[in-house]
Image (cartoon, rainbow, N blue to C red; front, side, top):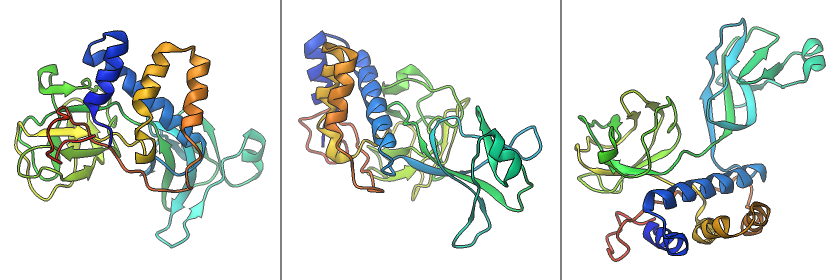
Length: 268
């Protein structure tokens, strides 16, 4: 496992930058790595959502943080739900299916069941801080001000953390992990599923989902991004990310701000 301070110390040693600047670079590298892994079509970072109806008849709004569509289908609750093919304009007129225009899917038929989408998602930026408000087992309010964050930034867009993972790093429920199924930007509240209610002031973290076998490359890629032309950086990144086994499960990573501390609750 890679510990945050090891990454940040290496980056700051090269450019003498502060921690926030180093974390921003780490987020950029994480995003670049995730896009390369998505383009390998190996099943990483996939999520499934029921689509919200749009303003036009038989139209549906795509998720804001979608990178690539994997499967569009009607969920008829059977073992083999009905797929919906996405065509170009000509095929759309002559066949049952859909077309995509920007952030909207248009069907040329009226579905009988919920329309669902499986897609590769864009990873959120890293964040660590203390819970605020009155946490419960099903709702956790993230840091609501810069002073309640140890790392990262306040996020002001709804659904930004949807399908990311929240891990508790202190308190009664230290080590518990939950998928975030909804994020409300105005209140910084996440819908979660813990076994009990954490306390305000407990330390949390949004996990980095870069697969474990690629974690050791992250600090070197941050430094490479800083020190070589962009084309050479991308070439090095691609070399570091050998095609992974299809549909292999990613192991999220946690961040530890004290590499000398052997407490397993913290590490990257």
